[in-house]
Amino acid sequence: MSKTFKALSVLLSYPSDDLKAAAGEIEAIFAQEKILSEKAISEIKPLLNDMAEKDVYDLQEIFVLLFDRSRTLSLNLFEHVHGESRDRGPAMVDLLETYRAGGLDLDSSELPDHLPILLEFLSTRPIEEAREMLGEAGHILVALTERLRRRNSNYAPVLAALAEFAEAEVSGELVNELLSVADDDPEDLKALDDVWEEAEVTFGPDPNAGCPVSRDMLANMDPATPNTQPGFAPVTKH
Image (cartoon, rainbow, N blue to C red; front, side, top):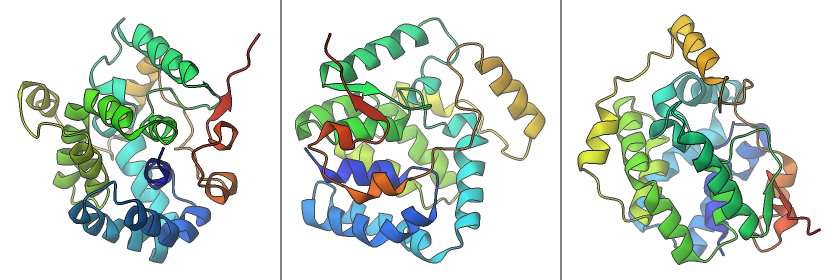
């Protein structure tokens, strides 16, 4: 069980004053647990510096332009492999059952494949299980890293660190297939609205901006207690 994945989940959440205040704590967790490589931690520091120093509204605007206004950068992982196909529903159900088998019920407006939600769950699991689950999405993590690098985003090292931890191949047919899709233009709001309106029929994203970090999320970074997991509730046994 690891605080590192909880910290990564927080870092990939919608920026808030609470997240800004937690930047130093997040860096300390990475350094203490050493689950990420020294190189990965070093490369994440510019984002942590941004979180600590930039105006929260500027941080929110950056986040929305990247992750809410760009389908090709969606943090909903199944978006990249299933899109609106019929396979997406069963994949969601399977993931929810995985969470339940781990003792947690999803209690969030976010979809179960939302990367920060998955990382919250992985913070309660053994390291090798976390590596295996992230490895299944390794090609997505690599593609997201490359798309973020193209935009010179300081979020790129976070995705790169996850891909490295998952021992994901940095190239290959699956990665190339994902990268063959043209990057979205976050300024083309009409095209974005058309895409998400279509997506809402099935498993579309929360129409609100990304879920902000709450004080509860940051107050207790202990991943061992299920009812401290933001986005989750303990499974109720009948």
